[in-house]
Image (cartoon, rainbow, N blue to C red; front, side, top):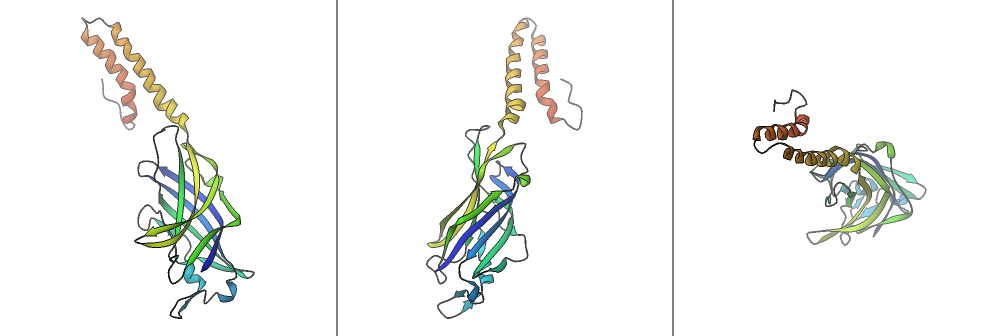
Length: 243
């Protein structure tokens, strides 16, 4: 069985978080170590029929699992980088794209979301090239603070956490690994721009009772004037209609 260690996972950029499409755009760098594989770099994988494949071929079997759409997440470099490190081989890959993430919005606007970037190795656990992934005891994972773009709406809470698991599909089991980043919504934006104005306008609606019932046009005028502030933002490129 091929033993693979996840020793580095950096989230370089988080450019957008879209709760409507249940997705986020990110760039990441991951590094895997193949223990004692330098001596068999050109024949890293040996099939039952005697055919062999190199470590470069094995690196190409690593693919994003939770990409938002087909080819929405791609390898940035032309091909995975494989280098010698003592007796080991180190595989380094950089991916960028849009990832799917099921988000829970029951606590909006005070919610927090766990963004997950998942990868799969297309070598079955019980197949011709059995592979097992483990998290290195000295794993390094981080979120590059300068690359976190949606800061006016979200804030990262905590660091990056790596994990390994298995993915089952059509009765076949593949090794899976990845990392998660927890982010919390900036609720102040929604409280000051939505909740407070809505509460104020709702309270001002009681001023309608100041007008006499015998003067319905006066009540209608007050009502339409209260409606004007909520209409103005929708007319950014022109004058609001006369009410």
